[in-house]
Image (cartoon, rainbow, N blue to C red; front, side, top):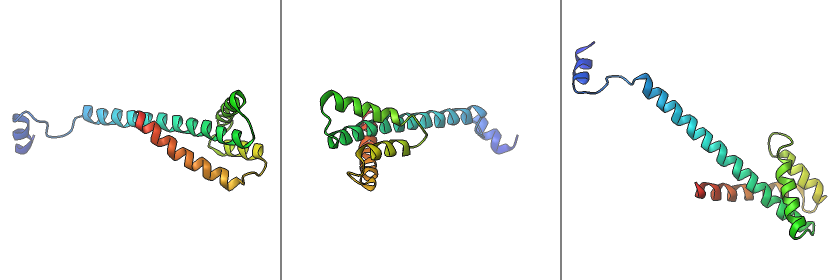
Length: 122
């Protein structure tokens, strides 16, 4: 042990981070990652529900039919990884009204809003 390490050790401090410190940091990063993934999942589900309601209104659905359609859109997200399955489903249902670019734009707008709401709740 060097004299500097001895002086630090005698002062009651560790000269170098211990393995426990690295383990604690690792657990902290894992917890943060898990929280971020959970928030993103909830934001995407919320976005999909809102997108379903938006598209359902364009299709002329109301009340229970609108709620059921929104749930179908949420479930469509589980068909394949990513959001393309949701976009394709809504674009097919709307049959070109509005255009695909508008659907994608609405998805981006709603996701930003959903992320803000989810972040505010945690």
